[in-house]
Image: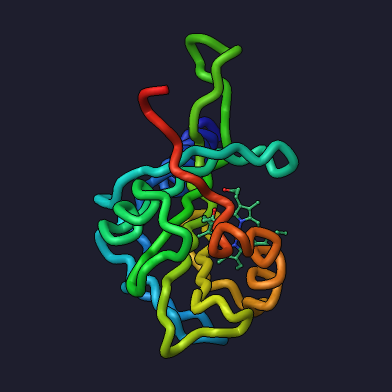
Length: 172
Ligand code: HEC
């Protein structure tokens, strides 16, 4: 009985460890517009342009930009140039064990991006293509509910070339 209990506990511990293990974004395609996760390969080396927190989803978000998008955001360009990629990564948050009134990133929950590609995308006169990869229990899945919702909600940021993000200053 004791042995069984030990095995059971070990199994739980292993499952927990597996759930927290680092899993890189696999090669996935959006079923609707065929945008792939590999388009943003190396995104972890993009520069951070802003941090956001969604109070309704309790999710911490980092916004990163590839070099061409970073430069345009830095120069406050009205229209983002062709080839711009803006990535958003969202994490659930947890209390810091040593200081519970501080929150820290817990589990990565989503990686999404927008890419400026005038030849392929123009659903809202915007030239942006949208992709979202959702992570649950250590598995990534391409968003299968279409991108109409992305396009229509981002239309409220039309004046800022459909981006909600503005570059966050690190000095003032
Ligand atoms: C109901 C509104 C809404 C919908 C639907 C929506 N977004 Fe957003 N999106 C936002 C808001 C608000 C922000 C800025 C706050 C944040 O970071 O969450 C944002 C930020 C982003 C950013 C960072 C660039 C920017 O515009 O600030 C990306 C990339 C992004 N969304 C992709 C997507 C994709 C892909 C979809 C669809 C699968 C989508 N969004 C659907 C509201 C929306």
